Image 1 (cartoon, rainbow, N blue to C red):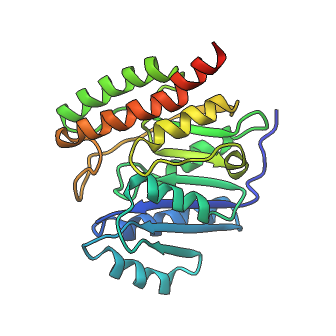
Image 2: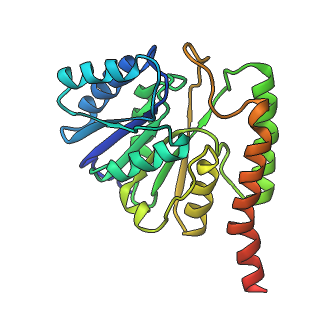
Image 3: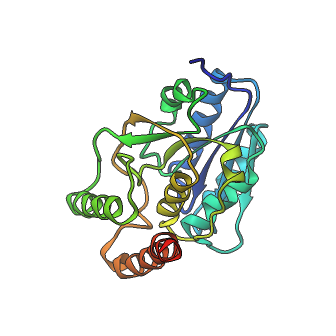
Length: 242
C-alpha cells in the first residue's frame, strides 16, 4: 500500500465574525501547505461577517498570493459556507477546518500520510473536547443519537478537520445550509461507499467569538433539520426498499 503523492491541495475555512483568529489561520494554512506541496491554494469563505474580518481578509489578499477569498453578501449559514468552499476548490485534495482556531492546522501533516490508495477521506476525531461542560454534554448526546439514527461508524462525525479527495464530490451532492451539513455529508459519503480513515487531532478552547451552532436556543431548529434529513436519507430509502 503506497501513499498517493500530494499533487495539489486546497485548504479552506469558513469565516463568520472571526476577526481575532482569521489572520493566524491564513498564515498557518499557507505555511503548512508550503511545507507539503508546491501546488496549493488557501480559500476563505467569509459568510457575511459583521466585525473586522472582511477588512483583515482584504489586507491578507495583498500579502498572500495563494489566498482567495469568497465574500458572501449575506450570511448563508455554516452549511452554505462549506458548500461555497467545496465548490471553489480547484485542487485534487480538499482540506477544511473552522476559522475559529479550535483545531491546529499544522496537524494536516497527520492526515496526509493516511490518504492511501484505499482511502478517500481522512476524518479527524477529537482527542479531548475543549469546550464548556454544557457543550460537552450536548455533543455527547448528539453524537450517540446520530450514530443510532444514521448508522454512523465514525468516532466523531462533528469533527470539522477533514482531508477529502475532490472526486468524492462527483459522487455526492450537498444541500443543507446549516450545521447539519456535517451529518448530511458523512451519511451521503457512507452510502456512496466512500472509504474513510480516522486520525486523532487536538481540540482547543475557543479564544475569540462565540459558537454559531450548538447552543440551547438553536436546539429545536437543529432537531427539526435533523428530522427532515433523517426522513430524506434514512426513512424514504427504507420505504423504497420495502
